[in-house]
Length: 216
Image (cartoon, rainbow, N blue to C red; front, side, top):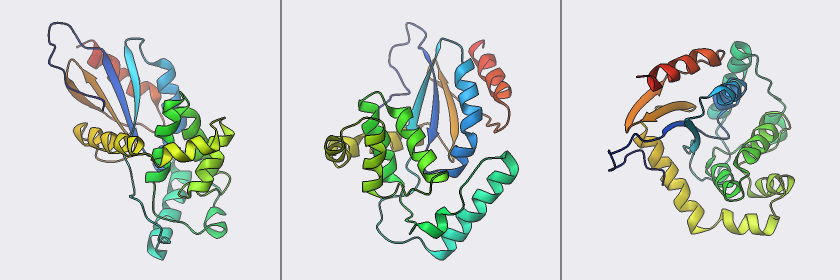
């Protein structure tokens, strides 16, 4: 578990910027281009950390019509407000399931191979652009294969107690960080928690806020 507290107050603790997200969160997909700009400009003393918050628990049940309609409208809203690209054929070509925990676990498995971002990218592109369903284990195994993680090893790790524990730890950390939704940004400096105001269109505004906090 990533601790946001420390008992060692003799030295200043390194600053960490926590990005609390879910790989199947559509607003996280909309935030992605601006987040990448922000990451590229972060001061060197700031460590960037992804936390998967777990948007929707395990389920095998088809998504309700009400939820499908809600999410389809959300995609259209994000596309309209941010210019984000979505392949709306997804809803006709799949049986959607309201379950994102498997995709979160896939990210945590990939993290063991230093391929966390590669898996996030694969899930997001597969889901939002190519009509793939990341709620399905077999689809996640295909993503793993695409980023050169052996399929059989991936499937074994995906269902392991260690990965389940890692998921629960990330969910707990997101609660410690007081994330109210996804995506969220939290800066921790010297054991002090700072909520960074999200700006989906302006990385500079968030960077300015972060630098001001660092400078005290």
